[in-house]
Length: 124
Length: 328
Image 1 (spheres, each protein chain N blue to C red):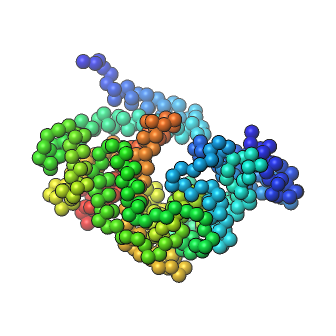
Image 2 (tube, rainbow over the protein chains, first blue to last red):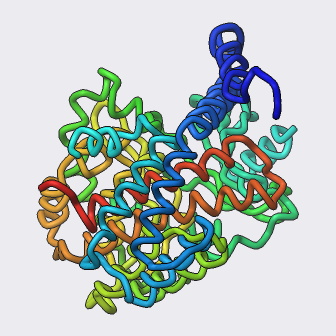
Image 3 (cartoon, helix red, strand yellow):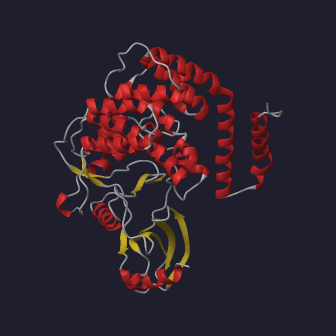
């Protein structure tokens, strides 16, 4: 077992330092790069917080939809393959809901400020 | 320094020019550069832009029209009265500047967030969609006989290219598969009308002033094909920058875009426009994945490229919003 602090706490501390102390001191193209860097750290923090539950729920849905076992990537490959072949489509019960939920979970980590995501969060 | 070569070059095509000043690199990758500079002349300073592949970077990548073709198209657009820089000079080997061309610099803004939010563009925003419809019509009406040699594309070919590129990443994306399937099922077939297509008609390639559109730039992806492609591409949600209820670039409606297009005497096919909007959304998603691949394998190991890989999910939600909307 690794000791405390957790990866999330470490990354947050670094991101907050960059955001609060370094950002005011940097200008020009490096200020843009710094912002991208801070965004990357924030993304990792969100992924660490959210992905375990999201991945587990996604795997459970996939097993149900496909009637098979496998790792998350194997299940996703199988789903992609069935959509390509036309064996599953938007008329398949549960597929639309699965794709929506999976995509919403991705956006919650990748780009929670994306306007389409914020709109759909309010829709449910 | 690039200024001595530029000064020599400018003297060869602009009699009386006494030199150049303020040369600065604007953007671009290793193989394609954009420079801004001033041409000094007793009659007045002229703002200019150099677009070039430096010496040693001759060949253009697969989909690119090539810099000579870009120069020809820009000049054709300018001569047809479309908002465009004027091409002042096409580089020759003796210029020792590589391949490319020099054009007049058009003042204005290309950054979408400023165009969509700054007060100085408040009066331009409501007229842009209609203007762009008219401009697209003008581009599609440029005489075929005067066009340079360009690749010819069809919807079917475009789907195939996109699918090949997506498969090369070897990463499962069920939403992209769904979109590919939709595109194959809705392939409208060859267009009755084949015209010049700008190929990248969107924010970033449009110079906007407080008075409206001032110039169309970047003909790198120009080709022959279905004119509806340009209208679909400019409606892709990725170019709305948060203003998602204004499909045309975050500033206007499809109806305005279409009205401007039809007023210029051209026929419109809204189903084809929608097809190309879906295609464009998927294309941008695949491009985001491609940039991530280049971050992994290529020389450009930058955070920016890595993070763009995490923007492809934006196109997944946009594809679902078009193909499988909920709650409405």
